[in-house]
Length: 134
Length: 226
Image (tube, rainbow over all chains, first blue to last red; front, side, top):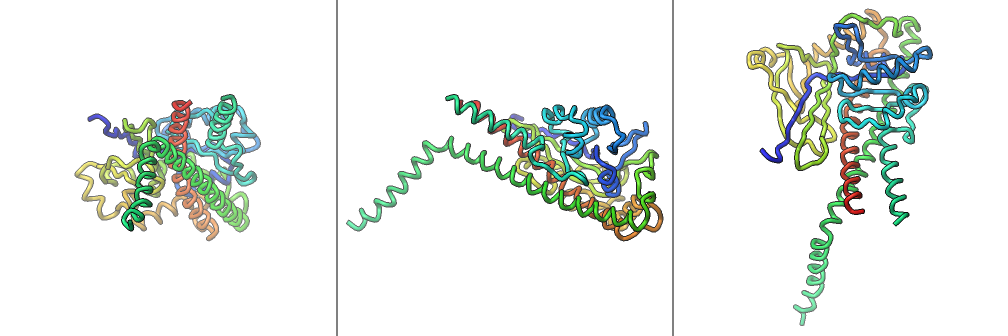
């Protein structure tokens, strides 16, 4: 029927995490931890020894899996540690999984580095540039 | 004379209203979209602030627990890599309404809910996906033969499936047992804080969806007007 909402649902999706040890431990206490049959977890603990490639691989894996609804990533990880995924985070457009940048224990939330707010700033800066040219 | 004097302000008001309606309908819709966008941005930032505060509390409680139990007793080395399903999951509903250009996504949290076969039942509801910032509008229909068995132990709040208190406590204890049989109250408090943080995260995800949707609509308006 024209105009009717088509609904796709996923009734049992996971929350993935790429964050520091305390943040991941806390959310695992809240029951979000999942280990599948291939012994793959839905989280990556980022420590000083964690390589950028491991973070990139985890990010790509979590954003392409169909059973993940939200990817939590420490803003510090996405902006400083693995700035190679900065472009991926900023240009990420899919509604699911939703990528949320969260603060970490040692680095508070910085709205100037939030990917959602960056997109808003970009829109308004391009609009003001366009109106200046008119 | 009095009637003329009384009707003229009224006539002026009516003329103004008609002018607003006739010439301002397009502008009114755009204003509404801008207001919706700004509201969602404000909510997003407020929720992020609330999440930061809740996480800080959780980290502090975790640090206190680590202080009383010892650093080695609360560490990622103790995390189990045995096959296990998440006790807290998400429900995602995407609508593709042709009256709205953007895909609307709604997230709902299922805390400590058993979503395995034979332990869950509910109904699916359609519609009302726009401007939903909290709560759940989605319930799922399960197989009929499981429905009766579920009623005793499981129920829904606002359409979200939850386990009974006994099952919730059992699941909470199971999560805590990774760090030992006897855990300090601070660790339990940290668990509750991170559960609260999950509520904020789900609201943030819904707000993010709304912000991006509003932003996209504004972008289209700007492009069409330029």
